[in-house]
Image (cartoon, rainbow over all chains, first blue to last red; front, side):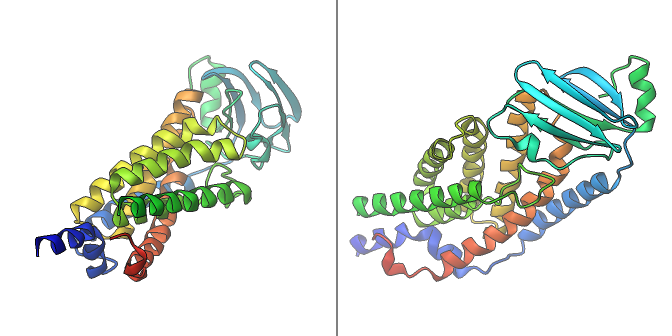
Length: 143
Length: 166
């Protein structure tokens, strides 16, 4: 009999999860936590406004800042080569010599807080709002 | 029986690598967030923990996280995939062994952990400017974690037992 008991123990987890349904009472706790997280996230995402300026960071340091009102092309040659375009109040990465090209595939951004990241070259582009523009021109760190 | 277990583990590793490579081939699910992937290998991990045990699951996910980036030609991805995959597998193992939660809950928590850890790696590499993605990652992690959790549950529930090593 002992010999036969070993294999059933082998499937202890499997049998347990087969017997129980898809959800249980204790899942309410997880559901509450996750729903709370989702609500907070949605509030963060929907709370966006048209951006006023764009900041370009290299290796975590603010390198340049431009207004979104003026169309221009910016080239960055730090660790790699990146070509950033500001056009009609939107920003996108036109060229990058990184291998994954995720930054180039990212659609153009225009709302406050949106960003384009080129991780291999250490470049981050962030849109800032009107309220933060004074902070940048005043030399304060607006991050 | 050991050989049969090993065969099943190898089979599961193959499945997780195939879904991992397919995930890299299809275009991003949401064009605005090109970093997001569905996390199909999450299903394989949960199934591995339940059918075999946590040691096999850790081995499967570690090998998958190393081989998939090499096979798709982007070895830098190992830095992102390996730590977060191992941590989320460890969390799933703990939760599954505790037998307190349903499979979809486990899967959602594991997906969210995976996403947050991956953001932390990205934060170290680009110096803390990536946390703006966090809300998106939490929402997408919960949705995809829920779906993969339901699929894992169906797999666990209806997989014929005579296919398993005994």
